[in-house]
Length: 227
Image (cartoon, rainbow, N blue to C red; front, top):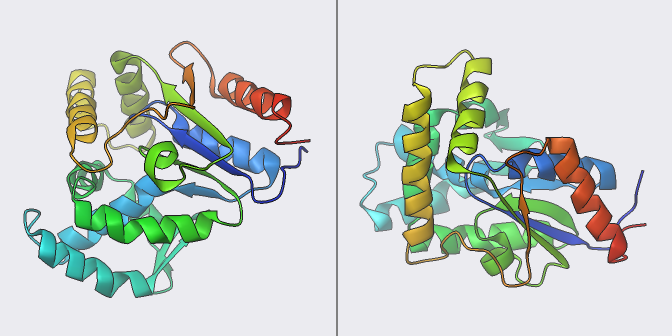
């Protein structure tokens, strides 16, 4: 097993379906680092917005809700716990994912969660999301931006839904949904999805997860960030 330098922060950004979550998990496992999925954090907020019937256009109300619920939330490398119970599987649903894309566009929410993310990352981690290298961890020692064609990303998500026995959408429907998320994430005024200037771009369209992981680890080793 490879070992990382102390407090190594690895930022992995990319659009939905680019494979960043799977790659982050494998890289973290290899380096014995915690993996932090920021998308799951926004899904938690979206879930709470839904459960509490909070209007998505009422930013002040959502901000207050987040302040109230964060104290009962425990964000770990293996998921999110609320009131002591693992709620991770509930957060993976497509309904929560679609709402999370809207919630994450709210500046007040992003600002509230920024400190949570930075505090947990301070001891070293692999963190994936959409603005990690540009906003959350701009000083990360290693930054990667994963991408793939829209159709391939849609296909991956469609297959994932099939595996979960939740295939209620056609492939074209899933592709359209991801395209809409891409637009929302890229065009939001606050902390949009963007490639950091010093990030290494990896197009995973025709690559397996293990091939992407191997490339990431090779780059980290070449930079003497892991041994």
